[in-house]
Length: 420
Image 1 (cartoon, rainbow, N blue to C red):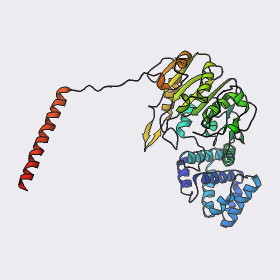
Image 2 (cartoon, rainbow, N blue to C red; image 1 turned 180 degrees about the vertical axis):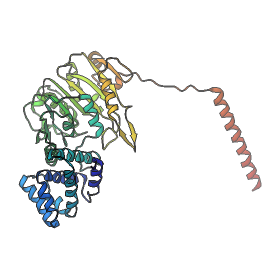
Image 3 (tube, helix red, strand yellow; image 1 turned 180 degrees about the horizontal axis):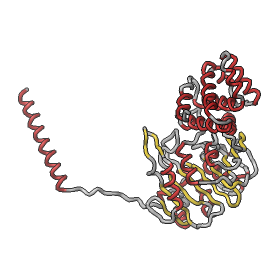
Image 4 (cartoon, rainbow, N blue to C red; image 1 turned 90 degrees about the horizontal axis):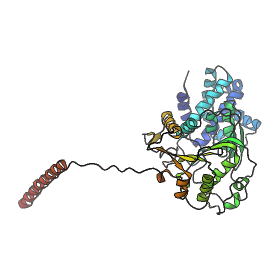
């Protein structure tokens, strides 16, 4: 039986002129079609390219997949036979339809994660992020989960909670995500919504787990008056750069009284002034900040910037905040950061082990207040500067040798000048 990588390699040769996002849409659609209509898919392969295109287009119309562009089918008619054949081969190797759906999901997930991010690609979490979140959060199968910027929902899928509530602003993203969950036969409440500007009541979930877009710009006029802003009213005006604070407020609003939130945010939010500083002050004073983790540069698929993990807990017992500097973890492979499950487990240990060390420590609310409510680790870790001890005798000998070489070259140069 072929493994996931072999099927991934086969699909990668069939992207043609398609963008990576269009390829993922088409591959996911055909994978789902084969699951729903396997025998018909097998028979249609004996037909013409036009009939195959019509067969797939009719399936899109029948299922009312309005998000899917039929132009992708027409423009890639010559590849459709090969793509259908890949998923039919996978289906034939599986013991039943459910097993096929799970394997097809694995292949599509691998395709998404291995795609080089570009401007048109979906909001996709990297394998690094999946490793970190799943290791830190652990088993939450009995919890309710909400993600207001779910992308393809890979994080919620990995955590395996019961019917997660997933929202995303992009219609095609939501369409693909629904098919991915349908393939693996996992229930989820997946809807298209602008989570920051479309008012809704709190979902009252146990967990909010989210990796919202980085450096997203917002208009105050679109978000002002939203319910999630009223729980922690901030007097400062909402700047266009306040998306991190808005995602944090939205996460807290959607938690129940004992809920926890795990949010990936840029480190700038941890020390910026204005609106961000006022929000930090409030959640610190409420003792809702459980931990802050600085993550290594390159943790994302498409950027080498550093990110941080903010953990909030509405039922927190301790009166300290755990600070973790994990920027030294992971290793570079072909200019990309690879953060293994072992590295992710190390971050979990730094968060949970009582003993402090040079990468992990607890700080009090009073200490944070004294630092103007900055939550950046650099404010609380001692900076050790290692000064190399020089061997003076060795260095003097090196200097004398350099001087000797200089005088020798100088003599040679003068001789050349005299011979001209």
